[in-house]
Length: 336
Image 1: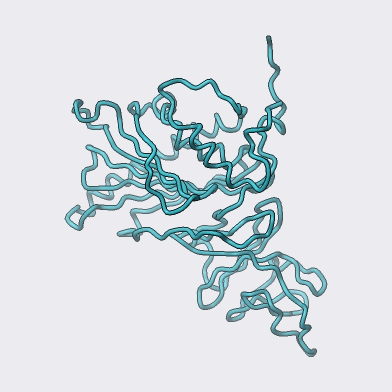
Image 2 (image 1 turned 90 degrees about the vertical axis):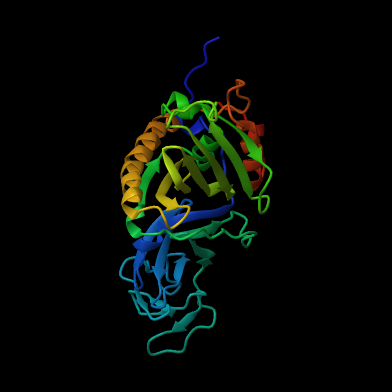
């Protein structure tokens, strides 16, 4: 029986945006005093950084007469000032100053829960308006700025769950990216229900002297972030990291922020050696990500895929991801 190509809006059953922490900017993009309009989760927002360095994300419109704070708004100390009539609001959203008049007690901006970890500014998104139920971890610092870089991809026609599923789809690293075949397991260690860990290695690693063998793993922290780590024979005493942040822009479109770096296991690794490894890391991550984007933007989601023995723990990942949707699990919905 022939099945027609699903229409673009119906090829995924994810009808609601998930709950959790999502990246909205890299830390270096928002210097103290910066005010910037952004659009995520289907709504307009404003991000700014105070003089002391605190990052704040707020609804965009001044409650006075509706001016957009992201266009002409300014930071004054620890407050943002409206460009229209110069009302000021503190980092909790309270109005603290009105020119030539008493401050209205009820004037307030909606402030989104915001945190900063690992050189990313994160916002907590929950359609039901609940406060954050867990926090993102902090990892070791980068040894040198030249060993870390970022890339951003906007307007991708897919969903966060689809992108992060790559970390559970071990076979595709071989079939699409031409890496060695991977085998692995689910790691029972975690720091809460929001944390899922997979560990893997190239097949027959101990018996094959090929220099492109490696061990690795992926740590999922909620619905919007996966930290991929690799350790290989070709780069001993070094951890290669690629962190992938996926953030909804609108329903069916998202933004990917990719951060990659190399971290030595000890101080004896020469910096020049690290730079040589880092120089090939960025182009390789870009190559693989752009190969995946072609697939993501055209594929359909099958709630009951016909998996093979060589596939990774895809169903384990999907079962874990269900918890981040506010209502019905997506598995119960059929693809058109």
